[in-house]
Image 1: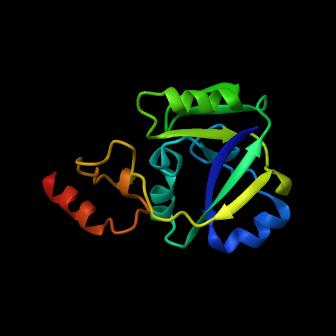
Image 2: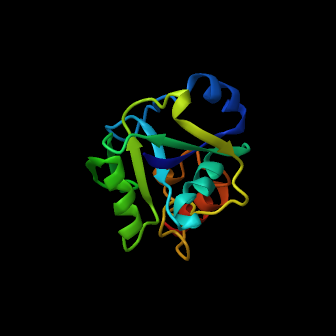
Amino acid sequence: MATFVHIFAADDRASILKNGIKVQKAIWRKTNGVFVSPVTKNYYATHQWHREVQRVSNVPKLAARIKIPDDQQVLIGKYNDDHIDVAASRAIRVAMKHEDPIGLEVIIPRAIKPDEILKIYKPPKVVGWRYHPAAKGTKPCGCPYCQKGEPFSKKIKEKYERSL
């Protein structure tokens, strides 16, 4: 069985334990599904999405460790890039051997049943990246498109406007 981690709002714990994890409709991409990270020996790579998800909606987060059959077809790829269709066990091998696993995501194209959830836990610390995996050391784009609805973006947008 292939093992993955899904980050979710702590308020949804009871619902997830009772009903499982529902498919998330992604407005910005064609594929809907449950967004997860493969469990590897690298804690940072496994929990990398925690900080990004925390940034989007600042509520306490929990992680669900789930298991799915090795032959379940999933999509794996870098955030905002093309994904490939592989078996779940192959997705874990890809993540473990990838030269730069930061930004990798796996999409399971179906809901997760309650009996597929191994455990729910609070990750000991928030790790990961913000904005995009290679954002560290780069200035954020201040255009209205990139900053639309972003928290704390007023100063970034004002600086961008002054530079035009």
